[in-house]
Image (tube, rainbow, N blue to C red; front, top):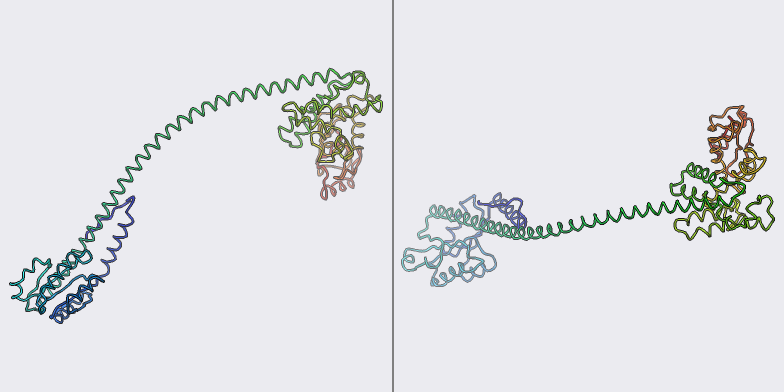
Length: 473
């Protein structure tokens, strides 16, 4: 059987593959032939067909061509065997044969005519469109051979027709593929042109974007320079107003940035706290000159109130300047207390900005150590410890201890930072030990014993106690 099966076909290939599968199934299973017989020799024909053991068939015997035509309208047979010598019925047989051959549903039916010598000479049956003719008397062996010949020819004809249909489907599919390929090629060509144009436009956009980005970077650089220049100018003005503690703001800025870094704050938060430390006394610029030469311990009550409000005034001066909003917030809340009884908003604990908590503690430390007569490091930390959880955050004070241990004022102030598990009896505490709620566990200058070390360990395991302990060097 001829079969044409395209591989990788785009469009139409599924129909062809299904057709080939159908042909394969037909090849594996022998066809059952549907044979219609209109003949007075039907018994002989049936007997001959029965002797063809390998040929499965259904034989239908009808008496008239009218019945046969009605049957063909419902189900077209594979073969019609018709007797031309039916009584007074030659014209109807001729009409039936011609109808078979012009009807699209039955035009491929194999039409076999059985006739006598007399009919053979008197009827031009070759004009009817018959496919074969067999003459009486019928000899079974000859009929069997002819039937085999008819079946084989009809099989080849069917296969040819199916292969022709398959070839036609393949050609149609190839034509559809060619059309689709041509259409797609045009689309791809158009898309390529669009893509090339888009790439050109994108290149121009990228070039413009890079130029603009350079301009933006340059503007950012200039803006940053202006910002820091403004900070330097403001800092210089603040320093020029101070009479008794110049350098305070710079020291506060340095220590505050150290603590913020130790607390793992972000780079932007650390920078804001550093700048806020430099400018935290900008509100004092509004204080009258006669107060700036007076030490705060000599202020009257009204002067103290005016002095206490300088962070609020300073924040108001900065908040409307670009880039100073967060810094102004830090400065505004410098006089909030950890216990919640400060100004301006009475914020409590972590509600107070972390920058405000850090700078408040560091500013107090610097004033006590560097700006107060007859003061010392021990006195400064004693004051701060007495106000832990009242004015100051214990976490900030602990990091302040760390700064002092790394930057001792004198050799006698030298300390060593140790973990709780590294402590030994006989060591002297350089700072007090507090519990998480601010209760003093061990005072500063305590000589450690095994019992006090175990006490610290128990609190460390059950609640928050700083793991780092500062011991006098």
